[in-house]
Length: 402
Image (cartoon, rainbow, N blue to C red; front, side):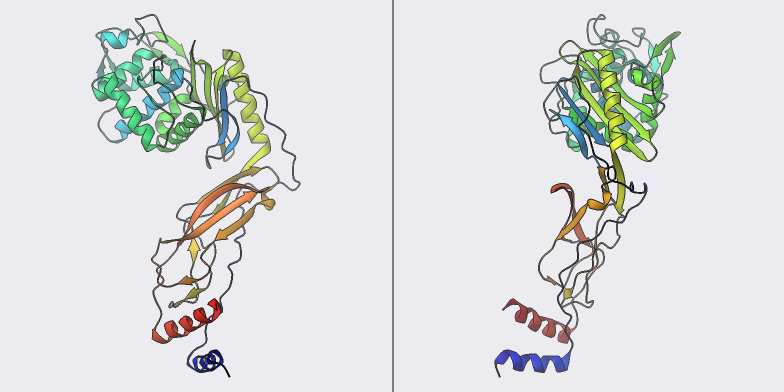
């Protein structure tokens, strides 16, 4: 009888060892909406006239279709989405108020273009205007004068405000974006990408829903002048509630749009289109295509057990693994059941583990393409077991490694 057989017999008298097992791949659990009964063929996205464009699902950030989405382009007045994001952050922090009286400097009155370039909210020079009115004028009418007045009030000067814009861009992970002004008139080193605009739009909708609601307003009257929202899609479909237009000769015609149907929200961005009507038609076609052929599901909640693989040398025989945040996934409509879930875990998990400690990776894919990856974490502390448990499991670990 060899040494291993002798040791095995002795240790079996002391304790029974938990059998090592390969964890089964977790199966996504559907939430609303219910998967389509029959799979659908997903056609190519509609043709888009533009230098760069993208369609994303708001909840997941997944890119459903794109062209040149990471190519740097001039954002024109879509710049004001970041201006409003910074102002909203300052409002939330209590540093400013919607009722603040903001002075309108000559620089702001000129609208960043000598009083002739760009759009205006018709702000009287050397007057004072409520901050809330300026925010409405900038978002709805796309007033450059309102943008500059807000920038000067929040940061003291427009260059200082641009520094704030860039700081927030970095915080939001907009790595291909840089601002030099608050309004979007053409300037060297003032650029972004369609992808970054989509990410910024997600952040605005998520972080500041009250301010985002202004983007859905069709008109705003200030100083006796009725100002109409330049996003013509607001009149076309009640599901569309934003976001922002932009245009100048270098940027072409641009539009970031968003719509919510049921529980699903999509965001489209079209840059460098040939005309105002064209950008609206292409944006609407993208949104309709996305809603028709994609659906979003909630697979796992934060803290939900995804898998319980065997645990060695621990008080418990298994280790509960899950996710730190909810996991949602966007898939072609009707193909939810084809999603494959896989886990990358160490071959053997040995105690101790601390709650929240990273243990492995959950990967979800369709047709060989990875749709989402998330770290798997320990859902509770998993301390070491007693002396005999550690000795017994140590032996079996040695046994299996041979």
